[in-house]
Image (cartoon, rainbow, N blue to C red):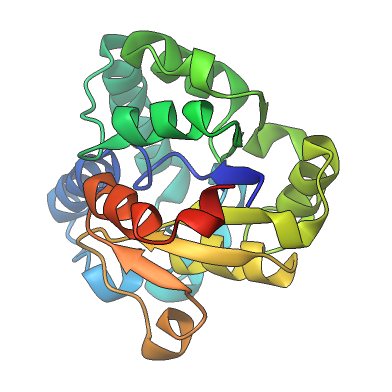
Length: 220
């Protein structure tokens, strides 16, 4: 393992629960009900791609533009205030990668400006050698485009690169690019057939540190 590609939302930062809470309240205020089963289908999906998913589920009368605008306003406020917590052990794991000369890349569906603001607020930017963003690719996750671009940018062959993801769309994107995938668990479950695609799953990065410490050959 020479390079690790990290998703951001739900993988490095505990953002998905906050985004779910925003959507849940917005839909409830407008007479709709949001379920975890539906929400997991949009996890990891770029913002430009979720409108069809909402209208397919709630019908063509669903006021997507109005609610999405309200969602973005609240999401932007969260980003500007850096109101996110790191997944437990994130910083220690990233430092360990640097110690073992493992290159780190960020592969996120979030847009460049938003991502850079979050990285700056949480003092994470220096840990990453490169990054790819959702507004700079034509096809969002689960399409493998962003991971194929990341592999090329890393300079390493695919068998020396792994991905850390949390969502169904992210896992499929990385697997379709030919990568081994490790999952950081979040409160939104994934289907059993998707879980079977994951090499290992961790509730936090302390567990990941222990796992790779027990397998030192993977850190050479």
